[in-house]
Image (tube, rainbow over all chains, first blue to last red; front, side, top):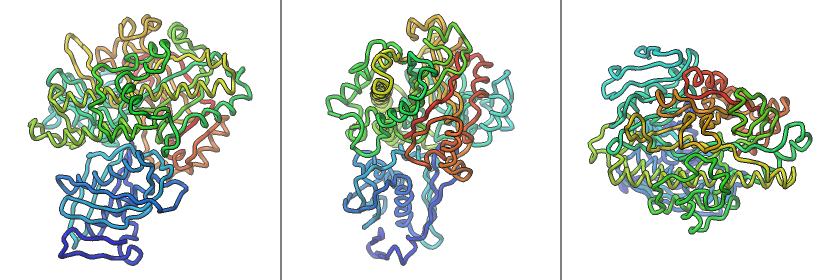
Length: 155
Length: 470
């Protein structure tokens, strides 16, 4: 897994198995009607990677191949909206293209723009997540103290 | 919560003075126990937030099945004065026109006998959840456009159309207001159930509680019925996503400040408001077509298991929307009524009700949790005075999905239901655990509250024979 930081000068890459990304840093908080995703991660990029891992848990089917590739390019007016848009892209890929994500091969953040390459397979993603809401949406932090995000998914 | 006071037998009020920004009071239909559950999970704060929306009249309302949602609580109702009051896509929800349709078979449970399990099995084979692109009805662009404009009128019988809220077609639908991405998501999804709390349930009329209304609805004790719960699938979800985004970006221009971004809204008369209402109507029509397609698939399954005459005699009682915004008139005022997890419940005499039901009131269906009872109600005059012609829509969750999963395994839910003689078809044990009956409020209590408040009266109680879930 290659993670490219948003500032080229601070570009860094690390292996998911050796670095912090393999550590499970997302959880589902209590929400009566929907699913509330909370992410704590060491870097901003890791928040997006964790969001993918959490989403993959929800839509996983019996398949495990990663023969298919999807590319995502999005832009938003602020950081938290970018996170919601990222998850919205994953919802769209699952619903319209039957894409079950397996892993991230590239993630590039530049301000509030994101480019990512995903590997996965065409399958039967569980049609659970309807949409990504803006309710209580947050994504803030820094690389010293860590990043924290909250997103409520309509299910 | 401390500001809430009881103002009626089953009605509570939080005054507009409780919080800065509230334009009207917030009212909750509940008894003590339901009010406590509603107050516990943040729903009161959400209904107070709704009370801040520009153009809202009288009060922001929560039904007794209300629970925490996003923006509006689920079970929330708000009426905005037209033309300049706001429309909020989040106040309708992502699953535009999620709703329920009840079919009545010309058959008693005793006549079903051993064919019950094969029937449930055949329905589960016939109605896909909608995962992937291999299932569901084909989606030629021309077909989708026609459905967006006309709903199930494209392929349903006149009898079914007559027994569908708004005749299955909201006025003002504009297919051009629906994005390409929404169409892509809807492609192939007509006739699919979806996941989460959606289901097709085979039931028996356990008890008739109002003989004249039950007779008008074509229901009698021991009769077999099928209740279908689904919505506008990916198409509607994307319409809401598109317009929440568009309105979120336009809030500053309209000079609207909100306590929650998900309440993003715009005056109904603005370009954004008009475009959303046109797209929402199209998505609502798609949802009615989806439930029609599911009903057709169910009738096909009935024909294969019980024979063609039974399928032919399977009538539609009615179809109601749970998530929609509609222009209606109350006290001479033209209002846009947002129902988010709530059901229209017009009383006897309304010309919006099919002629055969006009003397008894509009049918309303209240699904209980999986494995418990569901109710058929009829709209009462109190709904026009107190709740913009609205009643509740279900039992309402009381426990989160994760909370439910912590308490029970899906396999145990399956076993418990089967021990009670209920046939279960669900591909996901996790999904079954999330929908465990104890995760919901007591449906009997919810129905008791709307009856006491005079919003709707019980007509029949239905109990499950088999459940198919996505």
